Amino acid sequence: EGYIVEKPFEARWADFRYCKWPTSILKSKEGERWSESTALAEHFAGLNRGVLEELREQRAPSDVVISLSHFLPRQELLPEKRFLITPDIAKVVGSDFLETQVREAGSGLHVFGHSHLPIDLTLD
Image 1 (tube, rainbow, N blue to C red):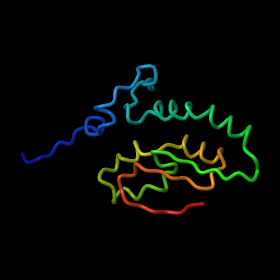
Image 2 (image 1 turned 90 degrees about the horizontal axis):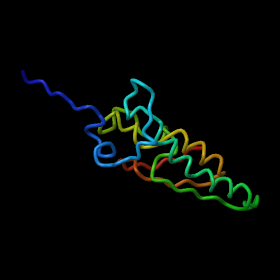
Image 3 (image 1 turned 120 degrees about the vertical axis):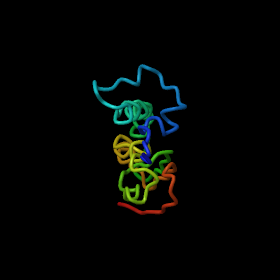
Image 4 (image 1 turned 135 degrees about the vertical axis):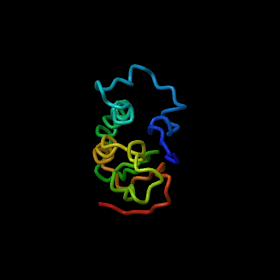
């Protein structure tokens, strides 16, 4: 009596409810929850590979690279879980693949959104 039963994260988060992802990228390990899979992050990182290769070939040492993403490029940019609307938000706001690619691009400045929190941090 009086207990609140919270729905699983996948049922609460719009990315899982409203987006229709191709089944070819929804492969996950047996027993793994969909929100724990890196399949989507891997898919989107794969879309950047050609651009990164082209950048490597054409970039002059004096060129300044400014990168942009919807998602956070580093987990440290997300505040501690106690400040979040839900601790599960870390599953959907960024990926390690993105950080690797920003570093590979040699970005001097990276601009991002999607944190759902007003935040301004400078990290090396």
